[in-house]
Length: 203
Image (cartoon, rainbow, N blue to C red):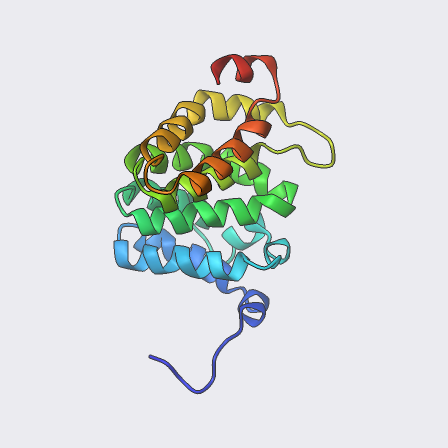
């Protein structure tokens, strides 16, 4: 319920609320309502250049005693609720924002299976403009070169997950709904996806 005292996004990050949400997901990853709100909350906290203040590897290990991490639960929640288009859009936006500025975040999320989770979201919601746009941004941020360096492991992971066909299918299915937005984000994602000869051939 609303209260007179509201927590700002900066204060929430400083208090490790992202880590608390990751921890909670290890218990409630099968609850669609909770996961939908959690994805949205993390996306809000990560927006406006705040993502660089969040270390996904560190936050995902907070307070956890069991095997695995909070971000593993995040990916598990995405896989469990792929039909929730709003949740998938927020989750893909989280991945895009968190991987855009910090190489460690991107590498950790790729290793945890984020490319496959984004691909599954696209496959399950090819007609949702919000999902296609957010997923395209996530794929672009994960595959972009960092400091002029290309990560071939990321490129290989994206190829194995068949992210390219899923993105193109989403662009095709939404072309009559809102073409400028989906095609702009889709083409922006294709540029870093096609960094090597094999990827270009697949595209």
